[in-house]
Each structure stands twice: as C-alpha cells, then as structure tokens.
Image (cartoon, rainbow, N blue to C red; front, top):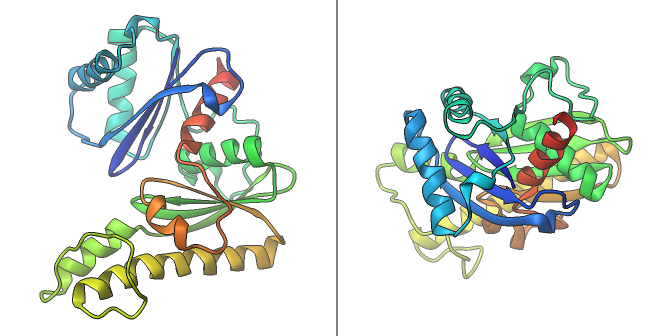
Length: 258
C-alpha cells in the first residue's frame, strides 16, 4: 500500500492507495487532520499508526510514502519518520524529482510542491489545457497547456485566511457559520457575511478563470481543496470537483521516481 501525504499550512490530507491500480478509485482510505508544525517525529508516527488502526489497516503493509509539504518543519519530521519507523521508499516532491511535466516558470524551484502535484494529476485525468483551482489557506490558480506543460498561475488569500483577517480587524463583526445564503442581499449581518463570502469567492474564481481563458482559450476547470465545497455549487466556470486530486498526483509522482 502506498501512503500519500499532502501537508498544507492549515490541514494535512493523508491517503492510502492500493498498490498496482492505475485509477483514482484505488484510493481506499483518506483522512484530513490539522497541520501542527511542532509535532515531534514520534507524534507524527503515532498519528499514522492510530489512523491505520482505527480503519483496520495493517501499517506493516506500507510499501512506500509520497509526500508534499508547504511546511518545512513537517518535511524534516517525515524524513525522520520514514527512516526510524517505516523503512520504506520515500519520495518528497521538490526540486530534482521527476514529474514528467515541464515547468515553464521563471524559477521552477519557487513553485509549491502541491501546485505541481495538482498539475500532474489534472493533466493525467483531464488532459489540457486545464485550470486547477485549489481552495485552501491560499487560493491558487494553475494553468496546464495542451501539451502538458505547467505554465504558471496566480495566488490569492483563501476563504479562512480572508475572513479571519476581517474578524480580527473589524470589532463589530463576529465569526459566522458559512452555510448557503438565502439571498445575495443579506437581511442581517450574519446573512451579509455569508453572502459576501460564498458568492464573493465564487465570483472571484469565475472572474480569474475567465481571465486565464482569455490568454489560454477554452479550458477544463477543476476545483480541489478543503474550502472547495463552499464555492463549487455557486461557480459558473468550475466543471469538475476533485477533492483527492493532490493525492492522485502524489501517487503518479511516486511511481515515476520509485
């Protein structure tokens, strides 16, 4: 079994793939946990052992780990975990790793591992040209050409990042549950925040995708990320919601490097 781990600034997504399968349906288990940068190596290992035990999987059957991270401290911990506890092949997405995708960025080393991983998975599943919208701590827009080249993208503060800043700076506003607004024109402060956040970010996504397509032509547009379910139902441009896109990209990259 292959373990795929995507460490974001806020959440870590862990997936377990059945070895040998060539389709995303080989994802047989997945978990989403908080990213805690100061966990020790042993605490990270204990977390994995507990998740496997709860789901009735034998952790001794792990054959490899593929890992991407936006948090350098956690990257170092996973190197230690693999050598100390699991002793299986480890692939960390970063400079020097084979992805099979040309990166047409001024400095390819600046591109986040999750963005490249998403691009690899999106081209494998949907071909190109493609726009990937990842709604997490940041909202990233990434473009893949018809020929499978990573072209670049755009970065915007994510929903939670933006609303946290709003509530911390505006004394009269408080956090609200982000659920489907009854209308665009809110009749209370709570409704107004819900409408502004959900419809506003949907409009942001649609507007950015339109600008991308003005340069690229018509594209397949895919959404992923923890906040995507809030936005996807109200977007006119997103065609596919693929919550485990990053995990599938990690599996593909692992196979290219194993």
